[in-house]
Length: 410
Image (cartoon, rainbow, N blue to C red; front, top):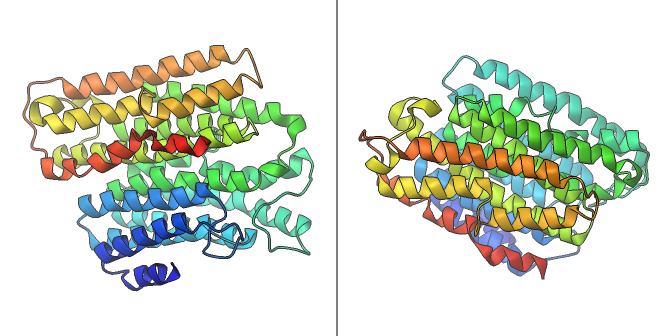
């Protein structure tokens, strides 16, 4: 198994061979799942599925991206993410967690097209620095004797658990710590956006799963309020966006807040549904940014007002675009629908009156997705899309509607 990992590293400058060897590695690690917590060997199906997801995303990037430097940065980021998902101790996990910021930063600064990219890089660095440093303090206070652990399970007060989770909440991102995400998405090239939404946001979730035992159950209402605020306010933010990429970024904030609610159920049912939503969001958001990027490369604009005539120009693009945004809205039979349904069913155990808030969230989320679909498909112009490129996104669409992931529950 390890030989495929090292062979993939050797072919860093050959994206196709890198993709082949790391895909074999991801399926080998799925086959030989280890619970021993040894470095490079995973301790949970969750993290192995994230490695598989990262290879799917890289496959689409490899098809759509022509710039070799961006491909190289994408490969480096994927290596850091794989090494984050399968560490043996908390310190290594934190190290790769922070290292994953640098390829994205270089992508934004080096390949962004507008001068605002400098401002967005500041946001990214400031949030990463101020919210990640306290993690080290907590780590050394509570873990000075034994730092060879995979999961953080110390008993600590509410304030300590809040500070410990702060660095992971930035990567979620939880509302109030989310401002870097729309800015980074808007300024980043398409490949960076796909990696940022599909893979980098999952680092926060995976980190949260590793420190769940420390969350103080007495103050669970604080975390619930954060997740509800994120779901509803970010959904309303989506309605007022004129930039389609910004809309997709705020849509990611709503989905990750919903995922946070699933984690807060604190049982296996909630964890399984959260993992499914992680996968669904990974595939859906990757394709959202891919299609928006295809339109931007063709027309040099991302404004929703100008996104039209998809169906008249390319039927396959129109159908795939509709499927992606219907999956984003949580329509059956997509994986998003099943995972969200299970999170709702599990969360009624905690709070009964939250049905009203969930109803508001679903109404608003469905509205902006349907608005974007109807706006994009209608029109009489003829746009020059590359059907060859668009057709390659079909495997990701199949994964997005793949109910095989329901087997995680059994």
